[in-house]
Amino acid sequence: MNYKQYIFLFLLIVSFKVSSAQTGASSDELFQQARKAAFDQKDYPKAISLSKQALVRSPDYSDIRVFLGRLYTWTDKTDSARTEFNRVLSKHPDNEDASFAYGSLEYWNNNSPKALQYAQDGLKYHPQSKDLLLLKAKALNDLKRYAEANNTLDTLIKADPTNSAARALADRVKDNSTKNKIGVTYDYIYFDKEFSAPWQLASLEYSRQTGIGSVIGLINYANRFNSNGVQYGVDAYPHISKTFYAYVSGGYSGNVGVFPKYRSGFSLYANLPASFEAEAGFRYLHFTGDTWIYTASVGKYLGDFWFNFRTYLTPSNSSISQSYTLHVRYYTGGADDYLSLGVGTGISPDDPRNIILLNGGNNYKLTSDNISAAFYHSIKRYNLFFITASLDNQEYQFNTRGNQLDIGVGYLRRF
Image 1 (tube, rainbow, N blue to C red):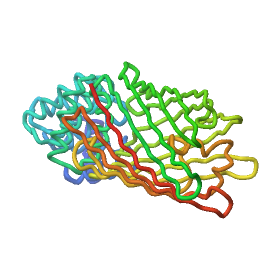
Image 2: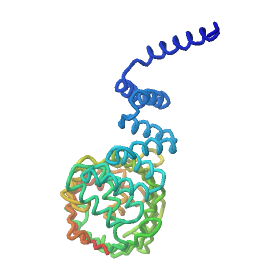
Image 3: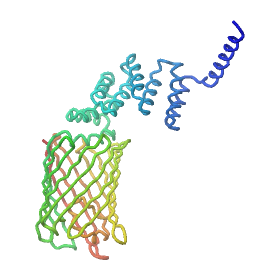
Image 4: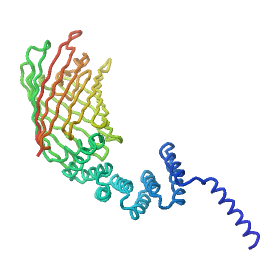
């Protein structure tokens, strides 16, 4: 061996010792460092490097390899992620985390048949896995196999009633599970001061599930101010992606005064992580003049509860009128079985009983406080009955307030 070879060997030994000193941590310690780099520092390249170092020490450490696959998933290196997940499942087909991570990758890359396959493979070994059951339901919903998705969610919710992600998905699946819905409602509104005669409202709706989302035809009837009126409308909830969907509405009435002549609305909804949902949009009313109302809301599933906070903002020349409402649902069973409580200030333009009060935006500047409650109950999944009640303390003239009590009932049939 000549001197050059000795020098090379010496440098190699020094380099190895330096590298060993820097990476002398155990595979578990490197794994923890990788997790810290990913979750605390958001440094995915560093987390990938540390995970690889850990796997050099422990090539069969499945938890680290699944984590590396997730890192590749988060950095859009899907082929590398598949390689890591396959290596784990080839040796350990019963690895729950690998099945879930692989299935989730396929689901978010619009390959729901594969996602369903990995979820079902994992459930063979872990039939009570909450993550795999939820992934299975998501894939079935995406494949329009709604009845199976509903059954999967029923199983999951019975096993884990506080699973907020399952309830959030169940709310979306319930409207997809049947092609048609028909519903009727009736409201009786009593005033102690503002009006001598009560108001009566009734509505008939038919909903059809289409390839782009649900489309609803509406006929609303009202008797107000001793006058009758009818309004015709169409609402739609088109799907945009797995994250976004929209609300689009329009309506017409020839009985201006009982209803606005025209109404329309649009909202964009986003299904966010951790069972959050956000919305932003507008509502438009035309009586003899135009009224524009802007709205935003945020919703959150938390165990057996659903919380929603909403605001309506109506600009005028000198100010912005404001309305705020908090609604809480407590689920007693499936997605259609719950108790609801709401408190708020101001007037909602999405509520047919209030829409006439927004004529020209004048009354909307007057103050209003309200509380509401509702009970919804389904029978054999396809029949939904509900009863609602609300009490409003409304300033109908300057410094003059009155109460209005609303009692409503309704029935909806899916088929």
